[in-house]
Amino acid sequence: MLELQNVTKRYGKKTVLDDVSIQFKKGEITCLLGLNGVGKSTTMKAIMRLVPISKGKILVDGEPITQQNINKIAYIPDIPIHDLGWTIPQNLSFAQVFYKNFNLEKAERMLKFFKVPTDKKLKELSKGNLARFNIIVGMCQDAPYLLLDEPFSGIDVFTRQSFINLLKSEFLEDGQTVIITTHEIDEIQDIADHIVLLEDGQVFASFSKEEAQNEGLSIVDKMRTLYSEV
Image (tube, rainbow, N blue to C red; front, side, top):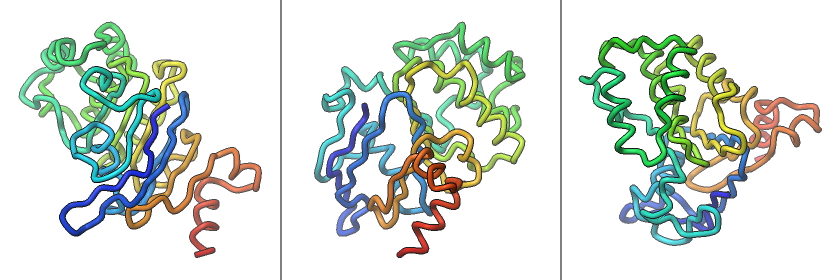
């Protein structure tokens, strides 16, 4: 399990995360939802130790996250992290060196299955294929935890559906935990197991898809109900 315990993050006098506690359970896809600026991306960066937290704890499998165990977590941020001037094979060769458990054979199978052209440089790919490549690299690190920051940003509805198909495919490892930040709430109905709503740096609400279904509601309808009660 990946867990935030009473995490606070301040930038000067501004509090971005305010006493946030979240448990991301193994084998579940959890979506962190909220408007821009509510702390979604900061949560991801704090988990990856890219920004120091001001207070609280972040644990992976019950242990503080260190350089020794951070390879349990694969992270795909909302900005390009691969060399756009390299071809896909060149980037995959680098990934083999950079990521401890990178599965090259799986990456090649996924690229073929999802019809991503491998004879081009990344800068020559469409936005959709570049998005597919990024998520494939994340999924092929064979890490127990996969963090995806705003994966729907800037891609069309057809590519979004392809992305959803990726997360529903046999390529997602059994028991792998996926955490997605997004403000595109219409895209997550088919993939999310659990929803965490952030507002003003705090957890506003948390519920499972099963809870919503037991109330006869979709995830979006459940969110509308929660916000209408404020």
